[in-house]
Image (cartoon, rainbow, N blue to C red):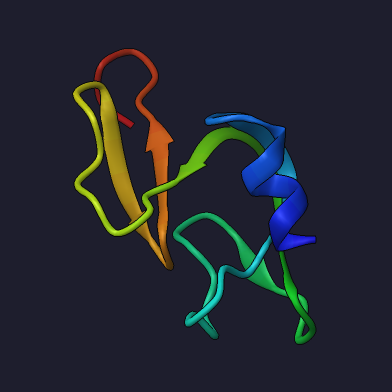
Length: 74
């Protein structure tokens, strides 16, 4: 499933995202399903960081992901 996220494009609005390789935790706003995925009740536009800083207009939410800021804040 992690390869599907990476192949699907740079950003995705998702309620369920895979844990990225090297991470056992979930990013901010997501809950660990105790398997290989993280779930959220809210659709966030997220993208893997690929080990780089988040671009302008995005914030690092941990576990290898950036989230697009909405309304310029969160």
